[in-house]
Amino acid sequence: MTTFKALTIAGSDSGGGAGIQADIKTFQELDVFGMSAITAVTAQNTLGVHGVYPVSVEAVVKQIEAIGSDLGTDALKTGMLFSSDIIEAVSEKIKQFKWTRVVVDPVMIAKGGASLLQNEAVNALKQHLLPLALVITPNIPEAEVLADMTIHNLEDRKKAAKHLHRLGAKHVIIKGGHDVDSENLVDILYDGEEYTYLTSKRIQTKNSHGTGCTFAAALTAELAKGQNIQAAFKEAKNFIQVAIEDDLGIGNGHGPTNHWAFKRRKELNSLV
Ligand SMILES: Nc1ncnc2c1ncn2[C@@H]1O[C@H](COP(=O)(O)OP(=O)(O)O)[C@@H](O)[C@H]1O
Ligand SMILES: Cc1ncc(COP(=O)(O)O)c(N)n1
Image (cartoon, rainbow, N blue to C red; front, side, top):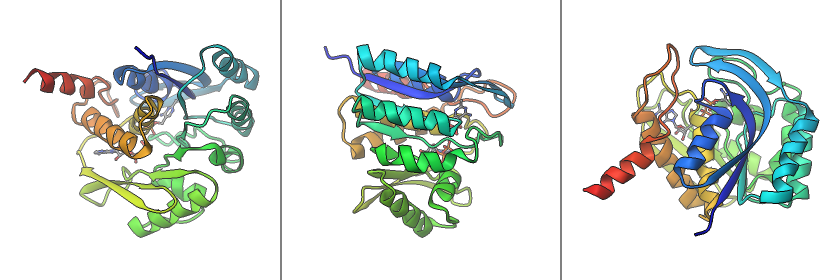
């Protein structure tokens, strides 16, 4: 049996709902062997971010080299990268190891408002990492920053996707979680020619901590297994939908999603 592998280069969330922890859980649930390079440690729970402690560039590079020189990976995702120095170093390593199945989740601000990317690092992200992305997965506020425009509606989102494609990302997914005025939730994918829309019902919940990380990790896992972007997009959307639906109700604030839900439902369905 082939063992598919995926690497996450991201921050640690002590609360377990986002960041490295969400990524590894998602990889595992989708039958992909998960590996990590940690860029920053955050002291975080469902109530917010209580501390951010970046890891040295040297330590980030060493972690990636340890994986690249031995295990290799079938796909990778980036999440919280924090600084332009880390972004540049990560980009160099992606090039060195000739990794192409690269998902860039341009994490900027935690749901509670804490900054997970320094302002001056946005340019580094655009210049160095975006051109290496097979797919970039911003939420609406992140797409606004990267495309340098305001997004009011779906047409604006399509324009922003085109802009990010021009900057070098081969595919652009702009997620719709922040479009809180609409009852349905639409995620869009642009491949340079056509748009694909995935629509789901908006679930009313305060427990959406880590949705972006989990979605991007599911996408990465499917790409690691050799799926094409369209198929990976659909599976990632299904994964996050049920993870939000079956939330765990833990913590006193914005709780995590349920990373078990997708596999458990699949197993239940195969029993009946
Ligand atoms: N309330 C919700 N109901 C259903 N799906 C959601 C909800 N909120 C977010 N999602 C889904 O979770 C994923 C992450 O969305 P979003 O919240 O936009 O990103 P981020 O977590 O990066 O801010 C997307 O696939 C989006 O469609
Ligand atoms: C370490 C880390 N990385 C990313 C996020 C963003 O979380 P979300 O997926 O909810 O946008 C987070 N809160 N913490």
